[in-house]
Length: 342
Image 1 (tube, rainbow, N blue to C red):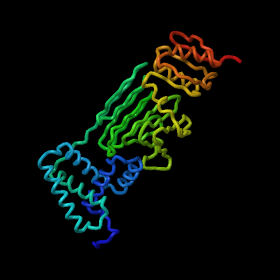
Image 2 (tube, helix red, strand yellow):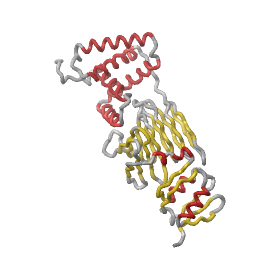
Image 3 (tube, rainbow, N blue to C red):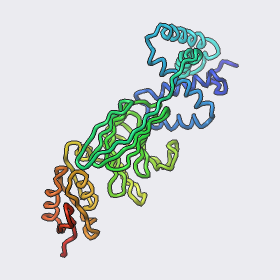
């Protein structure tokens, strides 16, 4: 093989394929890794089925190295691997770009573990978590990610070797994601999927729509039936942005979101800014035993204000005092709100 400045690793060679896999492993764990890196990585995996096998070897072996980093044989192996990589740099890979030299060194290091027959068994983690009326709950998941559940909310956790999947089945939750770019963190809510690395975001299911608010970092939002490597229908959000996907499938990008208001539920407050009465009542119902039903005649009346979560009576009194709405007892602890005649 000639030595030229354009020379690249040959992806058909097992050793070079491992080097590419190691380069992806390193890139996805970098602090500046983004959703676009996950997209390119997914395309690389789909290019050749052997790529996924090579990446699995790197990932599993590196897990072992991480857990046994201080073992003398591992430290010796790392030293020898770096020496091998330096010698390789002076020979066949002399003109390879620096990022691939680093990848080759990483591949050589983990290859020692692979060759020794050492491996990590992929662990799965699953669970169903719910909250009742007025109850909030904070969960620390197996990877260190933290999920805060709002009242009357349910999530299903499905952690596997290649991804971390959360299904938000009802209600609202805040996600503080532990960084592990080798396993994308995905949250499915309704017909939408949110993909994140290490970041913080809030998702709410209300009035048959999905509302995503990004608190910190970056996420991508896309329809659940679209591969996340497909860029075209994807919406990438940065901190302070949001997106609402309505029941009819219409997507509304929210370039400026008041994050403090969106996450005020964690402090027992609920903010409404020209919110349709129907969805405002749905939110209030999460926190109080007194139930509010909204008649279709009043469902679209815009409500604004801040209320204490759980104080349904104060909400009813405010709505009937300041808006063209009347309240009638509908039996038991249920109140019906109806539009007043002009």
